[in-house]
Amino acid sequence: MGTLRGNWNYPTLIRFGAGRIKELPDACKALEIQRPLIVTDAALAKLPMIAEALANLRQAGMGCDVFSEVQANPIEANVNAGLAILRSGRHDGVIAFGGGSALDAGKAIALMAGQTRPMWDFEDREDWFTRVDVAGILPTIAVPTTSGTGSEVGRASVITDVRDHTKKIIFHPKMQPRLVIADPELTVGLPPHITAAVGMDALSHNLEAYCAPFYHPMADGIAIEGMRLIKEWLPTAVRDGTNIEARSHMLIASSMGATAFQKGLGAMHSLSHPCSAHYNTHHGLTNAVVMPFVLQWNRSALDDKFVRLAAYLNLPKPSFDAVLAWILDLRKSIGIPNSLTDIGVPTNAPALLAQSAFDDPSTGGNPLPMTTQDFATLYGNCIRGTL
Ligand SMILES: [Zn+2]
Image (cartoon, rainbow, N blue to C red):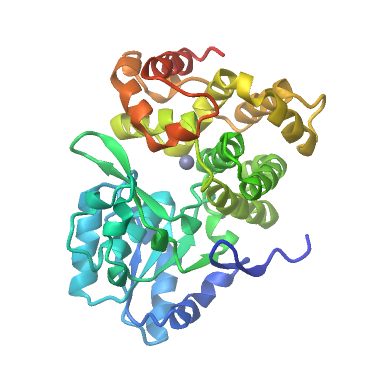
């Protein structure tokens, strides 16, 4: 397999390769962090990888602690609880360690460390990010343990606002972690159904970025190679979680998705965010379910682009239909359910969620302009499971 290892500064410093979690103390030194706070979730906190990281940091003489009260689809209370620990422990940096929820919570805690305004003042609207006191942001090291969100290279955190059941994007360019340790060995223990769901999230990022109707050839280039890696390696990663080659390619494909989606996302994420906020459905799984219905909806805007994409993916008879057939096959082969009903979204959801979907910041990147009524119709297709 050659050496699937490298040091990259794109889009941030990335130390990529199996076993590189050992470099965590050195990474802290490189950023002059002496008292890191590890932010993770409760399940991960019980695994040896966190205990080992903590031991290595302490052995290197660092005053390190673990905060693990981060729930799936994190809420403001999680960020505030972490902030209290960060401040009382006089921590000078954050190690965001885990899947998307832990990474997003960790990045938000580091952002909020030195702010006086409430977090919702930094929502990704107009120029609200300019309200941030940049000097008050602590450096973050990101250690992804799933291969999906790509939050390790992203400049935002998605936090659920429990007051109105919406997922809000907290954004600042300097929320991008300063350094990433991307170690595929950390993803080996992910069970097949999670590997499948997060892998489809990575696919949705590359795919929606590629479909977004803006001029951004750099993002498009990253997105199509990200999709090729997922096509080649996601089924293997689901079938044989110990295959480090597959795990390596999925881990970088996930970072590539988040790099590409600086260009934009689209209706998959617009539909998915309200489902997770209301019914706590898994983000990646929800995207995987809605994916073919959204593509079919946008078909008229995608025909030409998908001829090129299908050719690059080496699909027979390159066309929109070839890409759609590949995605339907892939979903089936890795055990993704077909409809939103299958994952517990009720039949009255369209009326309830369509407005939130329309308001979602991802909507602006959809290839076709959308209305609230369009989203209600599209939700209906996803609930019935009809293309
Ligand atoms: Zn996503």
